[in-house]
Amino acid sequence: MPSLREVQTAFRDVLLGGDAAPALDSIAGDGLAVAARLAIYRHHVGATLTDVLRATFPVVCRLVDERFFGYAADRFIAAFPPEGPCLHEYGERFPAFLASFPPCRALVYLPDVARLEWAMCRAEHADDADHLDPRALAGIEPSAWPRLRFALHPSITLLASPWPVDRIWRANQPGADPETLVDLDAGGVRLELRRRDDDVVFRALDRGAYALRRVLHEGRTLAAAADAALAEDRGFGLAAALSELFTDDSLVDVTHTTEENEPCTPCP
Image (cartoon, rainbow, N blue to C red):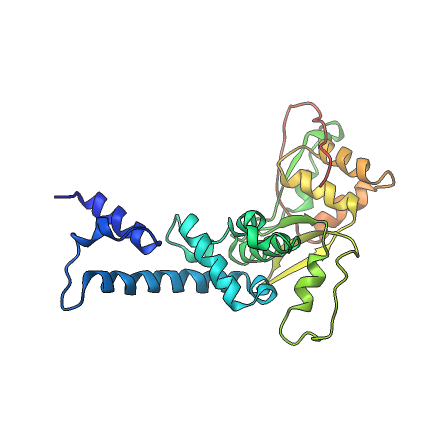
C-alpha cells in the first residue's frame, strides 16, 4: 500500500503531464474510468495555470498568438509547476524559460517583454510602505553619508534591455494603432517600474539615474551607487538625483554601515 505522500506525488506528476500509471491503482473510478477522471483533472489544472500565465503576460501572448502561447505555457508548466498556493506569484521563471525555449529563439526581444510584464505583476502585488521622510537624515554627519544604504519601495523593479520593450508593450495595448511599427534597431531602454496608488507605471531613466537606483536597490552604499552613476555619466549630479528619489517617494528606509566604500559594477 503506497503512503499518502507517494499517492500525492503520483497524482501531482500526472496532473503535470507525467505517467499516469503510478496513480491509477490509488484512484477509484466511481462510474468513470480512472484514466478519464485523471484526464479531466489534468486538463483543468493545465487550463487554469495557462490562464494565469496569459493574464500575467498578455503582450507576450499577443506577440506569439494564442496557440503558440498555449504550447509554450504547457511546456513551462510541466517544467516549473507552482511552488506555492498564490497564483499571482506564478510565472517568475517564465521570461528565463522563453529565453531558453528553442521555438522562441528568433524572437530575441520576447524574454525582455516578458520581464517587463512580470515586473508589472510584481509591482501590482508588492507590499506597500511609507516613504522616507527627508528629516530622517537631519542628524547624520556628512562624513557618514557615503556609507548610507537606502531601501527603495517594494514595488520598484529596474529593468534594462537592449530592445525597445516599452514601445513594444505600448504598441500591443488594447486601442493602440494597429499600424504602429516598432523599430527594433532604435536602441534599448533602462526602465523603472513601480506602483503609484492603484496604478502600475513605468518610465525611462537616463544612464546615471538608472545606475544610481540599481546599485541602491541592490542594498549597497550611497558611495558605491554614486561611483556607478559617475562611471555611466561623468556629468551626473548626485544632489539632484537624491532629491528626486525623495520627491517621487522612491525611498522607504535608510540604514548606516561602518563598511568602507564598495567597488562599483558596470551597468547592463
